[in-house]
Image 1 (cartoon, helix red, strand yellow):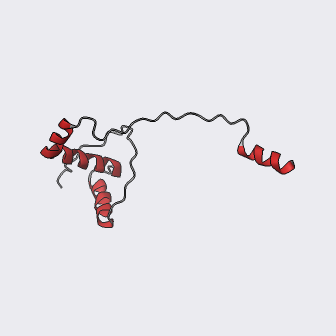
Image 2 (cartoon, rainbow, N blue to C red; image 1 turned 60 degrees about the horizontal axis):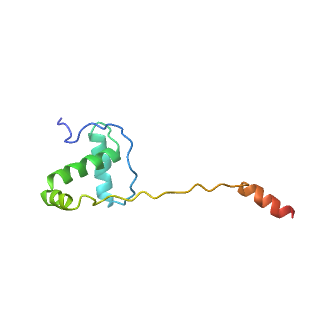
Image 3 (cartoon, rainbow, N blue to C red; image 1 turned 120 degrees about the vertical axis):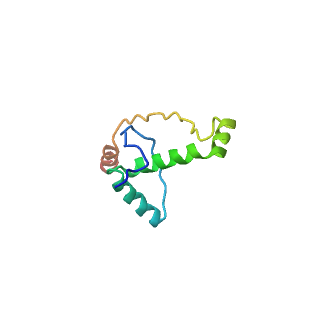
Length: 96
């Protein structure tokens, strides 16, 4: 039996991105995860994309010209303080 061409999963925390795949690609993805020593789908996708990005000379040139490409600005989120929980507000309005 041959070894998979992706490295073993390192279990680092990842950024979450949601996407949809064609059924045949999703099936192959799950099968490759099984083949790659039970690697997670996230790991298989990450390793495959890393190989793609490393192999694409045009993409490397694109990134060299645009070092900010792909970055998502971090938005400051203000915490909302509640004075009363929603159920407490419902009870208060129902008794009024």
